[in-house]
Image (cartoon, rainbow, N blue to C red; front, side, top):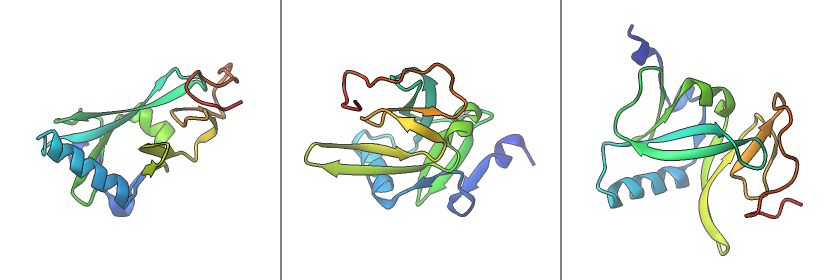
Length: 138
């Protein structure tokens, strides 16, 4: 079995959960942007006020070592490093009077920024303890 095939998972063995509302928004975005064959890349990078931050972008092709999560016709690409931090996470879309957006509930995060865009894990050393300018985590 090829390495790329080993890294494909379906919703039954998913390393992360994607809620129906998030799936619907992703499908809508793909249709609006006229990129139906793309997938949502979900990744983690260093930075943010809590030490690590989430990122998302649309990409057409997976990379060799990506894990591909498929849920109801939507694909997500996750690189191996990000997968360490995102394993077991739930991606949701929340719409409220204060604005809407994707929310990641991450069981690996021991703390997060008030706006939810950055987080800290138990292994993070020296990450900032204060909030960022765009949220009220004080």
